[in-house]
Structure formats: structure tokens, C-alpha cells
Amino acid sequence: QLGELVNKWGTLVEDMVAPNIPRIAREHFGFSDIEFFAVRIKVRNKKDRSKRREFDVIAVGETQVIINETKSKPRIDYINEFIEILPQIEDYFPEYTGKTIIPIFASLHIGADVVTYLTRNQIYAMAMGDETMELKNFQQVIARRTTER
Image (tube, rainbow, N blue to C red):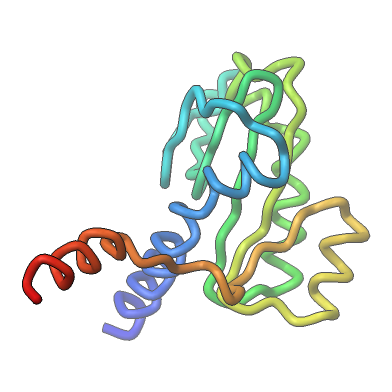
């Protein structure tokens, strides 16, 4: 049961991170359009069909591809595994050959030492901030309040 709970926690964190990726793509990397967006996509390595891998989030723009790895606890060994897979992205997605790969490692909280490690390895660190959530129905509730008075 503990293992199941840990897996659900990891999925919850992924579900919190994923909706933020399109905004990050637009605001920080200049994506004008997202051509393809997938969460928890499982793919086979095209060069070695015996290898399969799940990618937490993939967002594809015209010239760039965001590859996101999300962990509930940011450990250096998880980051090292992510670093190892980055040169193999085109083995899993040959259609992205020639596009700039933008690696983003995400967690709810990432300490300064881990941010430094990610920076040294040219990987973006993404964690909770003061603007991660938004009111989805702000204007609608205001309008209802106004009409009900």
C-alpha cells in the first residue's frame, strides 16, 4: 500500500506541473504555438526497440521541444538519470531532430543546492511559486454577483 501511495503522490505532482508547461513555453521560450503536447507519454526507442521510456511532459513548438522530468522529491540521482537520457531524445523521437531540446526538471520545492546543480548541467528548475494557480471562473462569479444584487 505504501508503494501505491508513493506512486499516486508522484502522479499528483506530475498533474500539478503539466498544466504549467504551455505557459512556461510561451513566456520563457517564445513558443507561439504548441504543435504537440503530451503527459506521461510512453515511447519505444527507435534505435533499440527493446528500450521503452515514459516522458512526464513533452511540449513541441516550431523549433524547440520541452522535455520535462517531474519528481516529488528532487534527488541528485534522479537528475543524473535525466541528464543521461537527454542525449538520447532523438532515439525516442527522431522527428525532433534539429529542434532545440529544452530540459526542465520539476518538483514542488527545489532547494538552492539542487537548483545550482541543475544550472551547472544546463537544466531548468521548475517549482511552486506564488503564481502557479489561477482562478478559472473569476469573471463569471463577479458577473453573477453583480446580477444577483
